Length: 554
Ligand SMILES: Nc1ncnc2c1ncn2[C@@H]1O[C@H](COP(=O)(O)OP(=O)(O)OP(=O)(O)O)[C@@H](O)[C@H]1O
Ligand SMILES: [Mg+2]
Image (cartoon, rainbow, N blue to C red; front, side, top):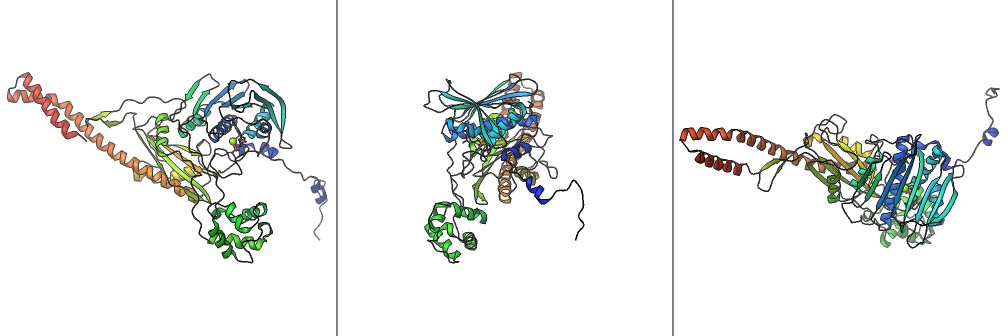
């Protein structure tokens, strides 16, 4: 028998049993708030704005409304900020407000498979919880549903021990909006400019969402408007059922246990996308193991479920539907970039849809390239080569392209900019693994190309596999990295063509500058040799210039 150590500090199993407790999801995330993007004051402020704006855009688009968003950040002194985000969306019905803002893991998007910005059901309640933790103040919500005479105003916080909402005050008031929602949070934070700022998040949001108008007032009194360049709402992504190819055994067992279908055949047809009567019959036949088309899904034993799972993997099923995806599109991607980044060359590529673990996704890549020194060359309608003018400055946060710095990488998931965790993101991995030297750029080992280049990458999916709950980086599933690389390579090829073209132009331009410099001297020499008058000399030079110009046309 092992000796028993007598020590006051040790506990018995019974004593340990006394200490077991259920952990509420709110308590968990309060302790681990870095998982939700609240690990520093600066980040907390960006995350709060991001969660509220993402929700506003989702709500507007779901209701078919062109989004008009107002974002205000006020400095309340001593490190406290008040963030207000207001939208012209459909509004929230009164009996949902407390749970949406005062309960973690409550939302309308988690259980459906369709492309939206939010998916987890805790973005805005987490922001509320952080606000409450740092300032003790509840969220202040005003919302009005179209047709209601008055708006509802509520002050809501979370009882973190129970993950339940607490309503502090409720009122009905007149509001100048006919429908929409305003969310205000007081939180401790730190306002800064730069690549990880509210300004940058909003600017990038404008790039990926050309149909959105955003008015932003910063705590220093600055005001920026990002106007829409398109009045077309993105096509409404359709909701889909899971594709059988991606389903795992545990999930299949859970689906069998909770379905309302009364026969196995119905279950397969109704609960999965792309499974019609014939495919369902084939799956049941291949599964065998005393399963019949009329077996009741809830009475299927574990061994039979395994057989069914194996059969699902064997029987050919058509590829997932893709109308569940709403890519930005090449033209709008390029327009969005042109509007916000000053550069000389733009290109965009939208890849065809693909699938990871049964989830449809689509990759889009766009690039902006600026000539070093800020001026490029262009050919006019008459075929003459000109220097383009110095660049104008675009509104809001600056995305400056530099010939001596690594390319600026802008990552988006379902049209939401990802500002943090660049290193751990599938997009970065794919961009680093792309051979940019092939396309005429410098590239250090294991790095992004060094060039005056902005690379925009968008991943649209019915379920974005984020690396953490903070939704800052995309997990590197091999299927996703492969598609990302194909998109980057396609843009790389377009860039390479452009670089060749401009090099040719530059050579022509240099040659012509040379000739122009010496042409007057040639004229004088000709005059002397041939004994021409001044007028005859000028006419000869003009004709000579003409001949050279014709030769130079590109
Ligand atoms: N401004 C708004 N207008 C209308 N509905 C809203 C608004 N903000 C939030 N909602 C509703 O509240 C729900 C919860 O929002 P929350 O941000 O907590 O989660 P989510 O957006 O579903 O997912 P995620 O955690 O990924 O953000 C949303 O699913 C949406 O239905
Ligand atoms: Mg959300």
